[in-house]
Image (cartoon, rainbow, N blue to C red; front, top):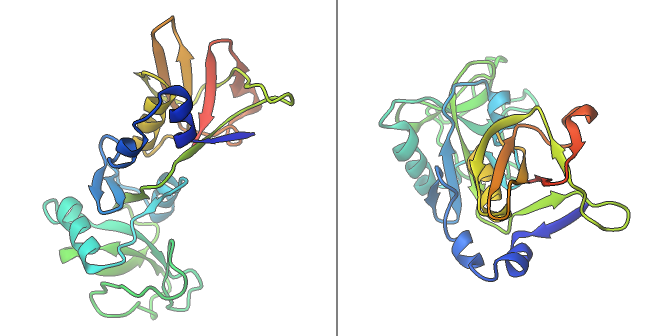
Length: 238
């Protein structure tokens, strides 16, 4: 497996523009400080929301300050009165709170009642409720969710053979949608902007035309029969 940072790919393929690319969020995401945020369109349980958001550099939202909490609630919750999952849970069923990306007990919390309801063993996941206050509830309830992506040097993988040559391999039967793209950078941006996207195929459809196919699975998640060697196609994973 060969791994290239987008910085290297930009130098090799487009020359420049790297810092401009990092300064903005993918289409559909909202920027705040050094992170990007997107509200998922459908309700889902906590575990489903975790899986959709769980990609390199991305996770369910976890506000770590009042300012970030206010931004998230203002942009996603207050106008629509939405209940939203956040990336916190009582993992050990002992009333202690664990949050994605936080070591130990989170410094910032926004509990309505200042504590976890330890007397209710079914309420183990955390949501933003009325006024953005945190409430514990059953992980199986269907709520809205938002993903958070820290702006950093993104990377993706391209399959290579034993001689180090890239293989023309495509993932079939996992298509989300097809887009016209100028190249691998644009296609990777489109994949990051689509929460369901786990990988993408880049098809060469002529001298100037490229088609970006977003997929809902990675190479390891798909059946072997879904992977095909196609001359004008390359599979990339985030």
